[in-house]
Amino acid sequence: MVITRVHGKVGGKPFRWELTDWKMQFDITTQEEQERKAVDSWFRFNVISEPTRRRLIAALNYFHAAIRLTRAGVSPWEFMSEAILNLSKVLEALFPHPGDMGSIDAARNGLRELGYTEEEIERDFIPAIALRNGIDVGHVHLSVFTHTQLRVLHDYTESAELKFRELLRRILTKVQDGSYAISPYTDFKASPDLIRIIDKIEKHLRNEGKATEDN
Image 1: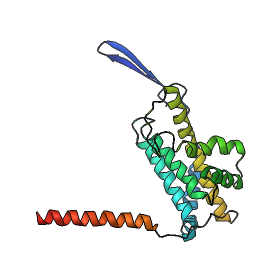
Image 2 (image 1 turned 90 degrees about the vertical axis):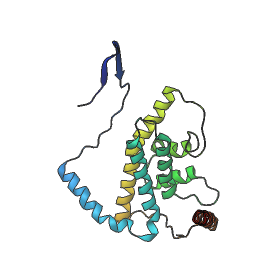
Image 3 (image 1 turned 45 degrees about the vertical axis):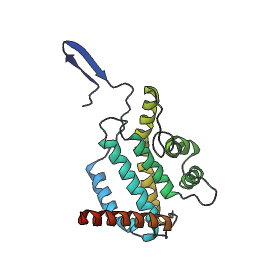
Image 4 (image 1 turned 120 degrees about the horizontal axis):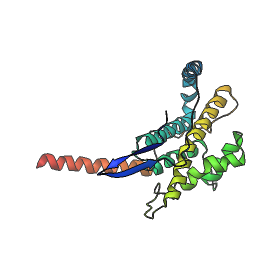
């Protein structure tokens, strides 16, 4: 059953709430398919446990965060910008951009290598990176979108879930059968600048705790 309309009266005044142009997506499955996915998941622990495939683990984590955010909001738009940010991070984690190449071009190249068409790349994936700094994600955004613009953004975020899920599934399958290799990541240490910031915070907290004890 799908609810398409809610109506009633408040203070004697009638009201009606409807879903307009709502696109629902389904992932059809069977018991056998679910059992196969469970078995595949166990075998894929070996795929993601390889230390040099840290980019793949990061991408899976960012995707998981994006999906949790879309489920946690009380409205379709509450955490939409944060969800898009995490989808963007999926692409940036998987497809690093060396030298002067930007993150969008690096993502395009990586997606082409995986067999995606230009239309699929530009329609399903690139908007996540392009929107990252434009809708209160990476930077403050104080202007107001129209209802139509918000609907377009929400529709993209909703449709992108299945596209990114399929991307990760494709990569896992290809890595497992040896037909694709994740760009390795071996620098596990935090940057010196970040370490200095953390050390500075630790010093402030330690001094604050000492001052509290003295008082």
